[in-house]
Length: 274
Image (cartoon, one colour):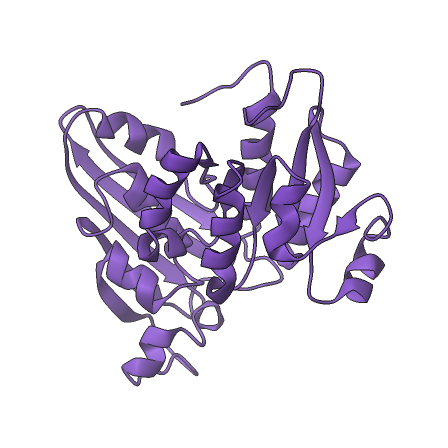
């Protein structure tokens, strides 16, 4: 595990302290055996210090591309534009990279081979989804099809590049509007901060070009809802999860605890699930 022995805590760095990164940081500071938050990268140090007094004291502040100097694993919680530079800096040092901007992996697939060459690992947490274990198990055999239908309150889709490019407005909707129907790769490109879940699903299963995605702006829902249907040679299953939005309406509250659970699994004596 990148040179970490069993007696030393895994040194964690967090790039970005938005709604998700801040919650992950608070949970690590509260205490998770075997894990230690040692560094963060933030744009506004004073704002970060108000939220976490430890920032600048026991938790050092680094540039995003310097986190791997201090840390064994870097959790990425940044705007998509910063993804590649940070990912490369972590991978090139042979560290563990945990991206939350999973959609960016589909645009930067060469990083997977780069991680292999550099001896690094890329770990994608389950995030706002359900049943990735089942999808990964099915992928050991033959998966015939995977489809995900996402319904979000319109505010959670505002500002998506796809909507702008196609002149689609989600303001003042009275009923549900399907705003996208295509592959997970196309969806991740058009909604880079909205459907990281679709990217994760595609990577666990049959890939971003065969994974089908529908996105609906639905004024009748208050939660980010994802329904996944999988048809494989070992099983056929349908799963639905309704996530309560975080302070950032594009992201569910389940993302932060899922990230902590993924970190915990790296150091726990018992790991349940694949």
